[in-house]
Length: 385
Image (cartoon, rainbow, N blue to C red):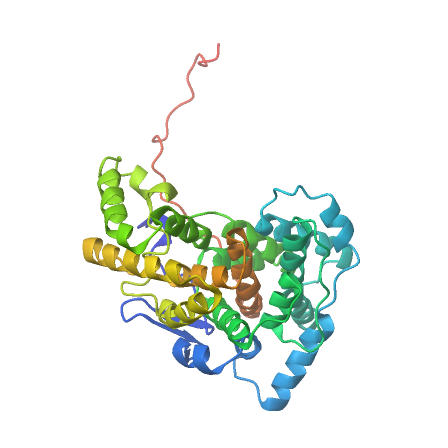
């Protein structure tokens, strides 16, 4: 059997949800280009598309929005749960634990019950931003803000986070970011969710598996690192020198060390895309406008200088994390919340993949290529004697 590290390039099954063309730098949800969706669709429309397979009619969209609004209720257990969580806990870890607790309180949904699974999926889409915003406030000593009845998904999160209604520009910026992050084929967290679904575990278990996988820095966390990198660079005129010095430093590392998180350039490169991440294009101009509006123009200029220096020196292209980090910062979002916001968007894709896996299920059970000792006899006198 041929083995490929990390299953790179291995097609494990078919899917009708998302298509990634890494060579051309194209991304499609159910056949619709990400360019059109980012410019013309809301997160609610995209979530409906991912789960139903088609864009909603006006009536279906209204019903979908009303359904989410009805599910946007703070759980009774959330306050007591957060009281016992250490203030230093990472927001994604809090979200992961909250999903597990919700499973205990609400009860597992049998995977064979498609209608109940869909209701649970919609409730998770509504719950994720409530948990993240509540924790962001609670750890700062502030009371959580209840969801607003008249706001859609993206502005509602900003409302619950800051306690003030966001500007139209800010709400649209987050909405686009959620659209761009809603799904991305068989990335690590989605694959983990499908592996769990393949065992016929419940949806909560699959989402916990996805969140646990997202927690790993080789899958998530680049947003936080981008902000740290820009703070370290400090100014546009320092970018070229900073990049050059880090490249020289990387050359002093052993080959295996160059693959470590500390040696990477966060926000650059992608496992699938050989050209610029198409999602990054839509966030660049939005990041620029928001940065100017909110007084972070220097950050954007520094980011552009780093991008230009790395592209010239190494030919590296930015990915979606690079500019989304700037968007989130301009929206007043703490850097360590970025990964949880990724989950707020991606849960729509996780639910769609969970349902698709169950629709034509086969236990996911790959093989490994054995490289250990050849078959050998047990010694006459055990080594432990």
